[in-house]
Amino acid sequence: MNEIKEIEVIPILQKLIQFKTVNPPGKTIDAINYVKKILSKKGILCEIQEYSEDRANLFAEYGSGEESIVLCGHIDVVPAGDKKKWAFDPFEGIEHNGRIYGRGATDMKGAIASYIAILLKLKEKNVKLTKKIKLLITSDEEVGMGGAKAALNTDIMESTHFLIIGEPTELKLSIAQKGVYWAKIKVFGKSAHGSTPELGVNAIEKAAELIAKIKTTIPSTKHPLLNHSTLNIGKISGGTSFNVVPEYCEFTLDYRVVPSVNYNEIREKINRILKLFNSKEDAQAKFEEVHIIPPIESNSEIAFLGKLKEKLKKKGILEIVGVTYGTDGAVLVPPNNTDFVIFGPGRLDQLHVTDEYTLKDEVVTYSNLLLETIIELFEEE
Ligand SMILES: [Zn+2]
Image 1: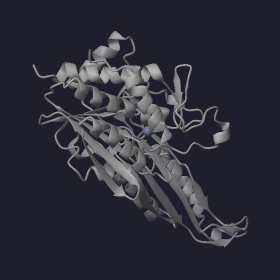
Image 2: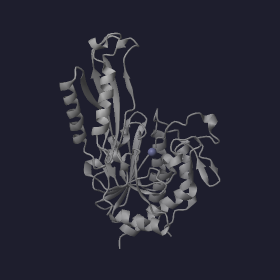
Image 3: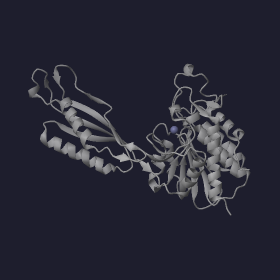
Image 4: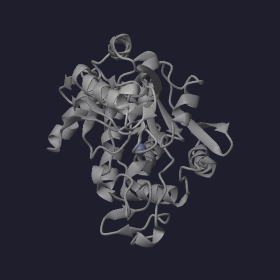
């Protein structure tokens, strides 16, 4: 039987939790070396990409075939916060009531343990597949996605038939992810004494007008899985005192974008607003893009997804969703427009929290769902 048992996956998860891959500082090399050790011991090809000091990605592959299925997860975790508030040590991987506790149990060492168990099982049973199964463990997902960016300098994503990103989704299938567009708007006015505002140009008041204009002009586009794109003005600063007409004000735009939104259109819209503003007002405004992550969406008709849907439906837990949080997919998907799913064990209310846990059963179920799908679709006749 090609079945992954609890004992074949949960101890790996517990061991992974014991490596403090907290980011920052983001030292992941020890955990990566551990994964390499257990895979290469069984004869699975592994390679480490140490792209900066103590930070590394791991590539492993099983089988042959021109195209590959890539199983992707990040091994870095967010800080544990105040350890005294934890009921269990965040770096022990303690089991209690069917749960495994620890930082990264949900986000996302559970999925990584599953991937390792899948490769080991395929190897143990010597399953012959028509596609390669690749493992990509990244670092730095929680801080800037440096690992995924470094991975793009290799051939890991070449000829990828399908990408699985095991971020926690409670076993829901997510085939869309919002993008992020951050920009800063700077407004330049003219200072004057607070008692004679008519002699100056109030940059804060002008910024307020601009905010209202931008809020009504930037489209709130609806997506069937991701709901609406959203715009948040998260920070504003300017001025010096009660009695000074402020000569400078700046504010930020945090625009969360659904896949149908085109960044060039956004740019053009903002530019048009500012151009009109600059031609009509005494104040001048400029904008600066700070951080951009593209939205991604997968073709929903692909066979791998079809098979997963079928299996989840049989279990009565099929749900197709989109995610608003970021994943390595934003880096890995766009170059070849790779088809993907964000699909992993772990409750969404367990992301980055104190006493983070994951359900053992869910990790085991996840491992077997993926293993069965791979074998049923790609086993050689
Ligand atoms: Zn994550």
